[in-house]
Image (cartoon, rainbow, N blue to C red):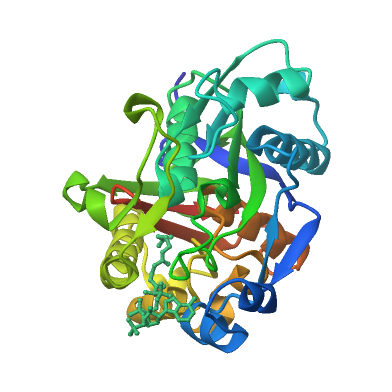
Length: 331
Ligand code: ACO
């Protein structure tokens, strides 16, 4: 195909729908005061978290993911069989296998295409979004559903006050569609991605069990160490995505960060030189939902009327691995 205009024709992965789901049970900070030595005041001031949702006993990650996926399909106005692929980010899949993604595929009544899970803990949605973008840009898929879904309540040590108050359950989904672009930053769709990991930091955030070690395990974290890495790595990956696209922070309409801790979120915004008015914040109501936190915040940000068509959005996350990264897009 030839193009007579000066701009190159490229394929962009554009978000055409979002959805989310939160389990019914809401747990306020004060509930933890009954079982561990903590307070609403401590949790709020150290993390910004006020409440979180916990899945019901019989509710699994693929249940949460299916609800979010159905909401995203309704929002996009398409059917499950209009999707070519599902990429699902989770560290808390229902079973060792099959993937949660194929379970969601079946539940949606999707009888074609392919589905798989991605595991990069709290950065999982960023890794999934970047992979989905690559599938679209390379022509392997035209429409991809990207889901982040977690039931972190299942890997909490309820006697460890340094971790159990910080996490929640939930799911969010976005649908990406291949659309023609010019190659300029005025295009809608994903403009740049930036991924990193460094396995040397394994011990500061991990689960002390798994299939191959024949145990289930609980989340273990050196909070202060994670905090130390977070602000610096999140700001630098967001800057890297902006640089790859040839853009600057002042062109960003919305930062949609991984919702782990309000102090990490505001520290990163400050490092980027962006005011909190341009940051979508949901951590007070959701806690840290790991791979679900960014798609939840994207969907809630849309529903609140914060993110509008044409807005420049930068998303960034860091989690166990350590693994971290960012995605820059125009909505
Ligand atoms: N209630 C009351 N006191 C507590 C609690 C609690 N829930 N948890 C810890 N404390 C105590 C500690 O025992 C410690 O007491 P000590 O001084 O007597 O030993 C004191 O509070 C201070 O503990 P620190 O861990 O130093 O507190 P800090 O100010 O660092 O805050 C926190 C802890 C909130 C975990 C913080 O380090 C943090 O947010 N780190 C980032 C970790 C994170 O967000 N991880 C999420 C996963 S990774 C990601 O998503 C980015």
